[in-house]
Image (cartoon, rainbow, N blue to C red; front, side, top):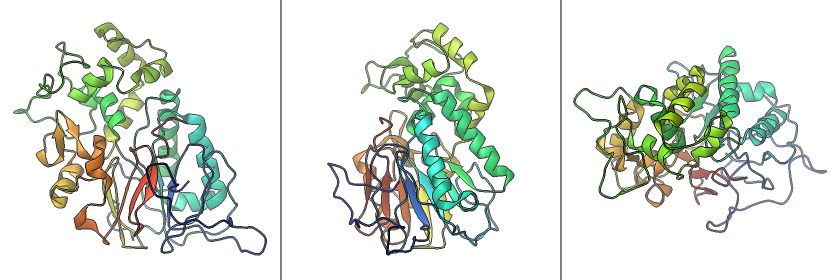
Length: 363
């Protein structure tokens, strides 16, 4: 839990002593925590008072009796915090889970031990997307996430679920009506990117009733997304025919379809620490694009907003790599920008650009 070093990124400054060791009082949990469900020793990282060490899913977390004085905010499925609430005093951001349910459960247990159940309930929890594919239990993962959402809603706690590129593609395959997006305008064609010149193969090319977004055609028409593991979790064989799709659609519960449809593309909120603002997306923001145009389109979940599209139905905030890794220049020193997606964990020198995805879903 917390950005760690990786071969392609410089390691942040670490301290060797863990909270609670002899001679040191247990540290108060930090206001911003980055959580990984994959196995790695949990380093301790302090940056401007915002970060401290928790535990990854593979280790025990220190017990904590500290509590937050903030009132928990209500759950929202949109990209902005509940109006009328104060800034979030603690935010827990959880990186890509990819169907690895047992790791996710261990991580959640460690968070409860470290923050206390009341402390975790009082915190805003932001899941950064990519809940399906790769791992063995996408079905169980979605059941568990929906359960977290409902349990926390009963306590008026705020939980945010960001849409990852895998989640978007799965929803697109299920059908246009389940896309986590604004309705398709009557003058737009959801199949407009079905046959782009840059992609000659690797997607479903047949006509599909109701149309299908290009990412859904890739998800169900190639091994690119590793959708086979998701099919398997629902007890359905993976294949490229309409019969395979029909069996899969029948196997996915309505609650799962509704959950995917509800996912936000961005979460932009006030926080009571650091630069006073936090923006969470799955991959990042296009550094050469206009910030406000991107945020407006992301909050509207606009499928056809040109400021969001890298090309061929591919969205910067969900799917891009190098061009979204850095901090957007308009946000320098003004906000935390947190994402998953990239397959590593890192924190920028100033502590404001954070990538939290230990392994891209591969334990």
